[in-house]
Image 1 (cartoon, rainbow, N blue to C red):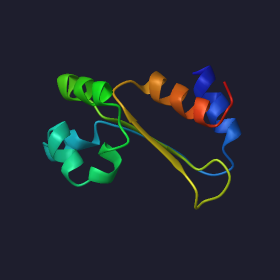
Image 2: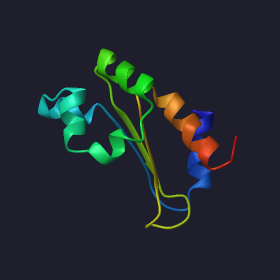
Image 3: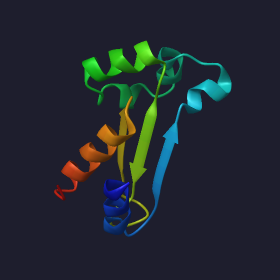
Length: 92
Protein backbone atom coordinates (compact mmCIF):
# COMPACT_ATOMS: atom_id res chain seq x y z
CA UNK A 1 0.00 0.00 0.00
CA UNK A 2 2.93 2.35 0.64
CA UNK A 3 4.06 2.11 -2.99
CA UNK A 4 0.56 2.91 -4.20
CA UNK A 5 0.43 5.93 -1.91
CA UNK A 6 3.80 7.04 -3.24
CA UNK A 7 2.59 6.64 -6.81
CA UNK A 8 -0.57 8.61 -6.09
CA UNK A 9 1.43 11.41 -4.51
CA UNK A 10 3.70 11.64 -7.58
CA UNK A 11 0.90 11.92 -10.15
CA UNK A 12 -0.65 15.31 -10.71
CA UNK A 13 -3.55 13.76 -12.60
CA UNK A 14 -5.37 10.42 -12.66
CA UNK A 15 -4.19 6.96 -11.67
CA UNK A 16 -6.27 4.07 -12.97
CA UNK A 17 -5.93 0.43 -11.96
CA UNK A 18 -7.96 -2.28 -13.65
CA UNK A 19 -7.69 -5.96 -12.81
CA UNK A 20 -9.25 -8.67 -14.99
CA UNK A 21 -11.54 -6.43 -16.98
CA UNK A 22 -11.37 -9.04 -19.76
CA UNK A 23 -13.28 -11.50 -17.57
CA UNK A 24 -16.31 -9.18 -17.55
CA UNK A 25 -16.69 -10.03 -21.25
CA UNK A 26 -15.79 -13.73 -20.90
CA UNK A 27 -12.63 -13.10 -22.91
CA UNK A 28 -9.28 -14.82 -22.67
CA UNK A 29 -6.08 -12.80 -22.30
CA UNK A 30 -5.31 -13.49 -25.96
CA UNK A 31 -8.74 -12.28 -27.12
CA UNK A 32 -8.44 -9.09 -25.05
CA UNK A 33 -5.16 -8.18 -26.71
CA UNK A 34 -6.55 -8.72 -30.22
CA UNK A 35 -8.02 -5.23 -29.81
CA UNK A 36 -4.92 -3.89 -28.01
CA UNK A 37 -2.20 -5.11 -30.36
CA UNK A 38 -0.09 -1.95 -30.11
CA UNK A 39 0.19 -2.47 -26.34
CA UNK A 40 0.95 -6.17 -26.70
CA UNK A 41 4.21 -5.21 -28.40
CA UNK A 42 5.22 -3.37 -25.20
CA UNK A 43 4.76 -6.39 -22.92
CA UNK A 44 7.69 -8.64 -22.07
CA UNK A 45 6.95 -12.05 -23.66
CA UNK A 46 7.55 -13.84 -20.32
CA UNK A 47 5.07 -11.52 -18.58
CA UNK A 48 2.53 -12.13 -21.34
CA UNK A 49 2.90 -15.90 -20.98
CA UNK A 50 2.33 -15.63 -17.22
CA UNK A 51 -0.71 -13.43 -17.84
CA UNK A 52 -2.15 -16.17 -20.07
CA UNK A 53 -1.32 -18.93 -17.56
CA UNK A 54 -3.01 -17.08 -14.70
CA UNK A 55 -5.79 -15.58 -16.87
CA UNK A 56 -4.94 -12.27 -15.23
CA UNK A 57 -4.52 -8.80 -16.69
CA UNK A 58 -3.43 -5.93 -14.49
CA UNK A 59 -3.60 -2.60 -16.30
CA UNK A 60 -2.10 0.45 -14.60
CA UNK A 61 -2.39 3.80 -16.36
CA UNK A 62 -1.04 6.96 -14.78
CA UNK A 63 -0.98 10.61 -15.78
CA UNK A 64 2.07 11.97 -13.94
CA UNK A 65 2.13 15.57 -15.18
CA UNK A 66 -0.83 16.40 -17.41
CA UNK A 67 -4.17 14.86 -18.38
CA UNK A 68 -2.71 14.13 -21.82
CA UNK A 69 0.59 12.28 -21.32
CA UNK A 70 0.37 8.90 -19.64
CA UNK A 71 2.20 5.70 -18.86
CA UNK A 72 0.35 2.40 -19.25
CA UNK A 73 1.65 -0.92 -17.95
CA UNK A 74 0.15 -4.38 -18.37
CA UNK A 75 1.20 -7.15 -15.99
CA UNK A 76 -0.16 -10.13 -14.06
CA UNK A 77 0.83 -8.72 -10.65
CA UNK A 78 -0.36 -5.40 -9.16
CA UNK A 79 2.74 -4.77 -7.08
CA UNK A 80 5.05 -5.46 -10.01
CA UNK A 81 3.06 -3.08 -12.21
CA UNK A 82 3.41 -0.35 -9.59
CA UNK A 83 7.15 -1.01 -9.31
CA UNK A 84 7.57 -0.70 -13.08
CA UNK A 85 5.71 2.62 -13.19
CA UNK A 86 7.66 3.99 -10.25
CA UNK A 87 10.88 2.98 -11.97
CA UNK A 88 9.78 4.67 -15.18
CA UNK A 89 9.07 7.82 -13.20
CA UNK A 90 12.57 7.53 -11.67
CA UNK A 91 11.05 7.47 -8.19
CA UNK A 92 12.41 4.21 -6.80
